[in-house]
Image 1 (cartoon, rainbow, N blue to C red):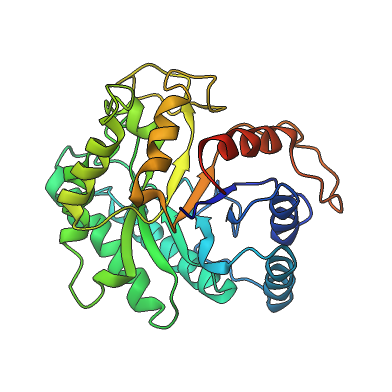
Image 2: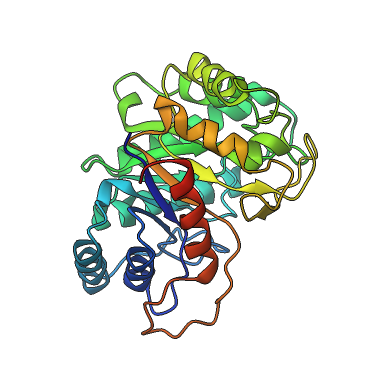
Length: 298
């Protein structure tokens, strides 16, 4: 089986250095930020020289661009009924797709945000509207826009398979092939999906999401959970150090739906102050890659 393991590596020095650190850790997939994630990024474009450096680094490390995911800004709330915030979130998502399309990567992922009026159906329509706006703003290219399931804190939307499915249901059929979803293991556990509940627990969760959306996930974020089951706490820890434990990940990699997609670690980093020109991989990433290699043939 072919698994494409990677991480959201430290990008000191630029996203091309994030790619070089991933390659040095033996990774075949990668996640990046194309701009500062604490801001909307709705007016941020990407310079051609930055694109070229990144593409050269991917070629050097032999990481296929289709296995690279850009994580959109955390502040984007596409589910909100607040029109000012919703408008900026739509613009930010469209700009993220523009930058990522220029980079030639496979997908962007985003957190849908919070349904602050408690109207879940209206929230699904608003998130879908943001996806459609992004896809229509960037009509060319193969970069997909993928919804990420959430841990379910407060009024955050898309914590269940049904909610993720309801978003995608509102995307017109003509654009549907350019969107989809991905799953975060910590978010699943924190929102109440018990990945430890028997040998078929992971498969049953994947079945539920596939039934509601009509497709398998486009990526998986590989994170153990510091918080307890159904705690709604989005706290990532190293695989094996949290409440999920290592065994559910072994079962995940035995499932056909884990093949051929980016499998991305978002676990803690140890060397956040690595030098800008230093391609040395993070020690925790090396540790996690060694563990993953024992679960599945890389």
